[in-house]
Amino acid sequence: MKPNLADIRLAEAVPLDGFRVRMRFSDDTIRTLDLGPLLHGPAFTKIAASRTEFLRFRVEDGTLAWPSGADLDPLVLYCGGRQQAAEWITAHGTPAVAEDRKPFLLF
Image 1: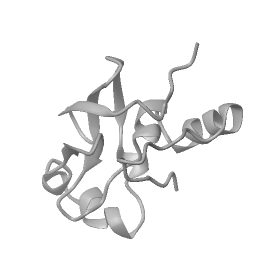
Image 2: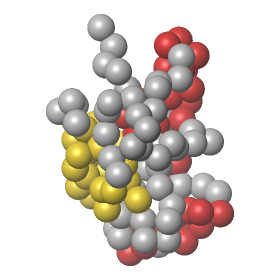
Image 3: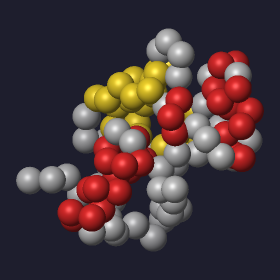
């Protein structure tokens, strides 16, 4: 049975080498993911250009966020990337978003 991804939130994140992060989610799933490929677009320009800026991330509202306001969708983090999250949505539909949680964009 697939977890209800609307309920899955990032609980903890630990930086590793490069742009890799070890993450623990609210269902106790542990994932290690290279975030480098996800750090593109105007919101991530400074973050992708500087490990120092990258390391300023924090867990906020159930996902990774930076002081600049940039954040990553927890579904993308949980599934292991944008393509994997898109495939999950295609197969299972868009997870419902609880009213008390801000919506995230995949792309």
